[in-house]
Image (cartoon, rainbow, N blue to C red; front, side, top):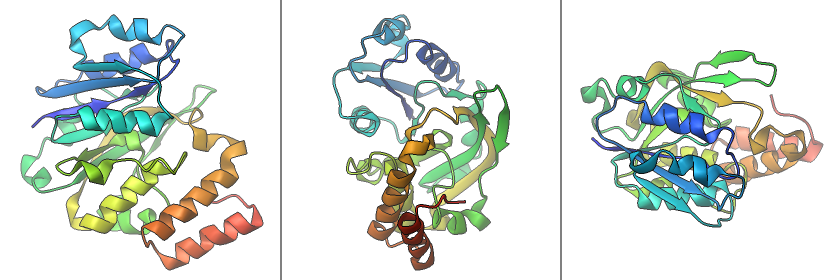
Length: 247
């Protein structure tokens, strides 16, 4: 099966090369690599072009943010599955995708295949964050996205499942996760205990303290929109009201 890997890039010349190299090093035989750039001005475009025709599709044009860029990549994708590996994040090794899809019988008929993430911090520390297995997935999903979007592969037989809602500037990936969960249920998920990627845990918009209240607000809206657990939705409403951090 063909797998489409889609990174969104913008002014990331110092880090995009490592991301591209980690994707192109994968030993999966049918891999489509689509790079969607937001009209970078810092040399990112030049770095991408150095990889030549090893990149299946390259687009560089203005966009309205990372989720808009990811939607553009989704529309260009011709694979049966897609993954989003943005600049600065890397796969943990060249055999990751092969390991995730090694058991074709278990993957057959599934909609979501996911694994673990290694978080990398500014001081150089790295911490493995195991993702909830299928037994704990529902409980975690009702609280927050239980896997990083770099460590999940979505079936895109229906691309509307994976299209990011641009009303959310921070939590659109959680909205996609909830959408799959509500539409397909636990039986559509396959967990593989493999470390999929190394993720810069300090560089995302949701990790910035000044965005804490915005994150809580979007989490609440996502849960309301997808009719998630009433208890967890009420907890998010209380956090937003009291300006307290979620744990």
